[in-house]
Structure formats: structure tokens, C-alpha cells
Length: 316
Image (cartoon, rainbow, N blue to C red; front, top):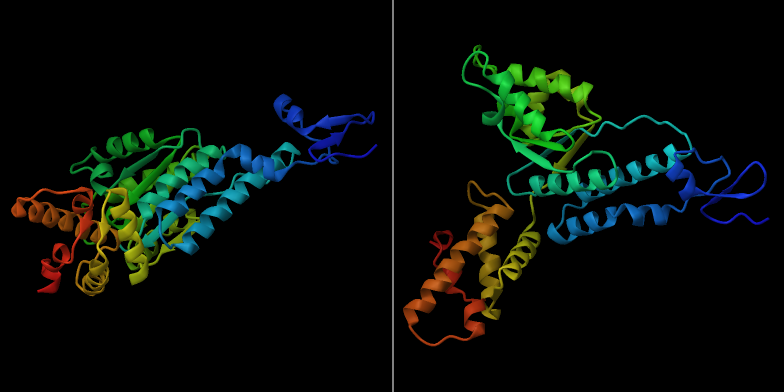
């Protein structure tokens, strides 16, 4: 008898449907075959990965790592159906990079992806900073930290600027207590929580040097590079398109010039700075239309002109 994909053979020679075996909880026999393409489709992981590609420009190394993690979890799930126990992978992570490079957006999609692949129960993301975790007096920190962890259970806890948890210069700082509670939960309850620490790379490196226990619990270090000028322009066009705006042909070189100038200035925050620039351009655009006091059509309401950017302080 010819063996068909997705079917194994019972000891009596009759075929065993791998989907039926999964439903009953019975391990698949060694000769069974599983259609990975179908497993991947059924998990709906690709819709999350596709959304990540559509929402975020660039970040190829980041997206590659997320896809690798998805592949590992999918294959582990199939291995488990054969009774192969490879152990639950540690997925605590560290995201490093400048502001506005997409760390929070990736964390949101990561939570959704891990839920669809059965790694976490709920698939929600809880964002926290030092203020959410560390108290200001004795006995205040533990309840605050535990409350945040309680809300995050079954999902992903994203701690931005995590290095602020540790302040070596202040002997009375309570951040170390929050770190110790986090370490315990990351080790003992990693089957129900994924922790993502985020911040500037150099500061996170110093944080891990001061807290080797935390470093040893982080399995994935993912760096988010700053965006290049052409990527910033693509991000800006995506943002404008979502808001129903476009650039007049003569505005395109002005917008590129704005991004080049702004990128070289202090406190540049990548996509955040691009968003702020577009918001200010919208303000100038609206003010310009009202000041003209004339009738407007759809094109006028949706087209940004050079002066909507040239009046920025970036050009003065």
C-alpha cells in the first residue's frame, strides 16, 4: 500500500491520520508524515509575519530572527506530536536600539505570534517602565512589581529602558528588589511569560554587566539599527498614506532634504521624528488652507506642499 502524506501506518497495516492522532493526544507512529505547509497555514503565523513586513520598513535582521523563532516553535510543535520532547525554548529577549526603531511594534506582533503558535496563553503585551515596577519607600516595590507581572502572565512583558531599574550610585534605591523578583519569575515561570528588555545598546550592555543573573536569562539579543534616509522616506510615505495625505511632486525633494537635515540634528528619534514632522506639516497645511479662504477640492485637502515643510525650524 502506498503511504500518503499526512498519514502513518498502524501496526495492522491500516493508515493513521495524523490529524486524528493529534486530536486524541496519541503520539504519531515513527512512519507518520506531517504536512508542514498545512501546519504553518493552520497556525496563521504567516498573517502576523506579513503584517510585520507591511507595517515596518527595513529591519531585515530583526524580521529574520522573528521568522526563525516562529519556525522553531512550529517544528517543535510537530516534534511533540511524535512524542519527541526537546524542551521548551527560552524566549526572554533584549531589544537594543535608538528610539523610534520599531522595538515596541515588534514586541506587539511577537506576542500575537507566540500566542498563535501555542507558546503563550493569551498573546497580550504589557508595557512597563521603572516607575511601574519600583516603589519609593520600603515595602512598596514588591507589590508593584508583582502586580505588573500578574497582568503580564500568559503574554509578553515589555520593559522599556530597563537599565533604569538598576542605579548603582544610589545605595537606597529599590530597583534591585524589582530585578530579583523579575529574575525569579523569568526562571520559574518562563512557561507562562516572556520578558523583553529594551533600551540603548551601550546602556543595556552596562546593565547586564552589573546584573549577570539577568544576562544569563536572556536567550535572544536583537539589535534594531537606525533607519537610513531612504527608509525614513518610505516610513513617512506609509504614515502619510494612512492619514490620507500625499506629497506634491515639488515637495518630494523638500521632504528628503528635511529628513537628511533632521537626521543630523540632536535628539533624532527615527520613525518618531518622522511622525512628528508629518504632524507639524499637517498643521501648517491646515492653517495655509484656512488662511487662503478659498474653495478647496479633494486634492487640496490631501496634498502637502513645500512650504508645509520649509517653514520648519530644521531649515532655519
